[in-house]
Image 1 (cartoon, helix red, strand yellow):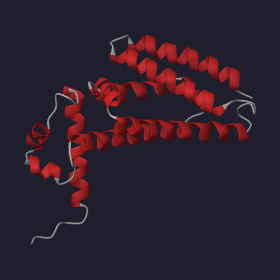
Image 2 (tube, helix red, strand yellow):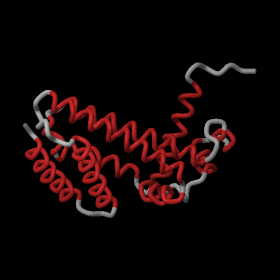
Image 3 (tube, one colour):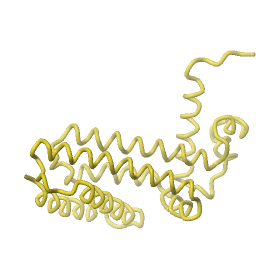
Length: 197
């Protein structure tokens, strides 16, 4: 039996996830097939099933990768900039780029969550984890005296995510990105002015 090189399986799994993300984003989750993903990679469909039990498992891996990537970019941005930078068009632009890259997948995901309890649970869990990270970030700013002590960090974090997701939905529907960036900037400036110490 041939030996598998260390890291080969992890690398192969990553390649499958990235290719599935590309195809799901272009065609949508429901119109994509495991056969098509395998064909585009030049492997057999059976090879995909060595890593993922079904297309839904692959979708979950894609969503986990996308969430991780988005969080890395968001927190990297915050680490490199002043807190006021979250009101910038550049900050919101990171989310717009991510939304554009996911294409049709966003719409399919909403539909799929409406009928799939386990997927909805996973996405809700990812949202909660992201929300917790923002709450933690805001709490640190309160301790450093940058934000007012009486600020409800969870309510502010939830509002920020709601504004982001609403504007990203509008972007997916084709609304002008310059307008959406201005909306983000104006609302976030108002939010920051109301919570700064």
